[in-house]
Length: 351
Length: 64
Image (cartoon, rainbow over all chains, first blue to last red):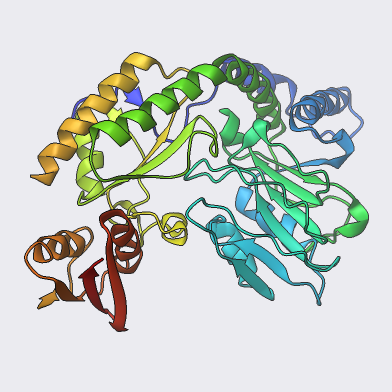
């Protein structure tokens, strides 16, 4: 195997701005912010400054933001905290597995999706709950706001990050620090109105989770959020033209490729496509041998040997699947090299 | 014709099915791979075929 020269997999290393701040964050933010020592007061001030940054980038008030360490826990808090005994929980067939896990605990209804990746949202009753995914993390497809839904809305913003457009009416929302090149182990969780939410976890005070949150990592995540948002605004047009170029090449230069969504229906940094008659594991390995790292939703590349539930629910080809993430640093030369290498490998594997 | 792909993993059942249908007008496919059903849906759309589920792991596939 050669070394990776072009990275198209979803995970990214910590943003350099956050990395440069890490040691300082641990020096300054180690104390317990609920105590009254000088160091504690300093930590509390830094935590508030971080909250201000989150607030301005995520479009929620500082009083609505909480931090938790585990995104999977955020799905439980965000959904189960809104449900009552007589609520029906609606979720889409392309939601994340964490949503399915919460749905299995409650009376729930899965909403089918079409080839476009979109679901028809029901009107529901005021006490019903809907999980609304802003952007699908596998296909990049952007969901329309569930304006007609009368109930409470949990927003899954774990893949859309700071670019999430919150619906006019929302109840709870969850973001993952990883989506803006922040550190793992930090998630932002927001509750619009505490009166509509009940903590589903064992608890003894107003704090929503007793997990031992790292305040220095929250501060580093805030720095990453600010830096990533700035980079993204500068690069959005470039990412969009790269995405357009990839789609054009796949449609014209390689036969029998099934592409998820359109340039207009997806975020520019994500792209999923499947090559007919191709074993994804071999394709991913061949690409890696040429210096390209990519993700795949095909069964042969998953731990449980099941195909991606997202591709299957949309009716897209599940074998030969490649998922590309375009990062802020991705450039046209590496995309062109990738496309021509992909074409050569697909032709070889199909022989 | 009957094409037995039991025990084979994706994309082999679809590759063998496409080859068989280049000379046959209809094929009964036996496949227990979890990707076969979703892939038959997508493959039929992409290559203009149709299929019916006859039984568990048993499909009748024809050209459109």
